[in-house]
Image 1 (tube, rainbow, N blue to C red):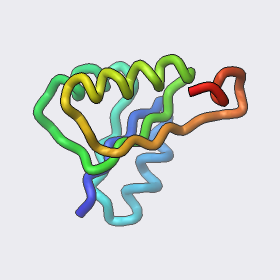
Image 2 (image 1 turned 135 degrees about the vertical axis):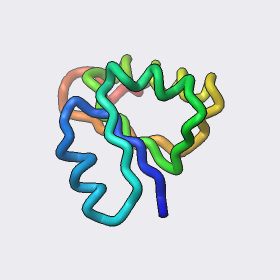
Image 3 (image 1 turned 180 degrees about the horizontal axis):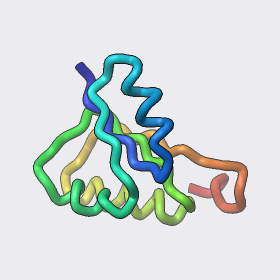
Image 4 (image 1 turned 120 degrees about the vertical axis):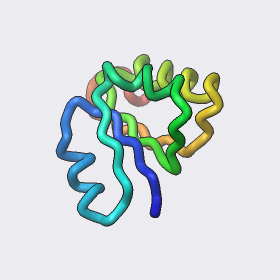
Length: 84
């Protein structure tokens, strides 16, 4: 079973993925930092963060802590998302 960690302010994405029989951990952005430094692993991370700067910082932080799973960034049409 694939372990997916979803970081979002909205639980809908995690709920949708959980319906596909994946093992889903639903985290709010304020709990993400504690997860990064912990021992728990993921097969895939889905980051739905407010800005491209936060998303890039989160990926750098993940890699710095040895979390090497693929990351899917959820973007929007707002300014700046075409740059990361």
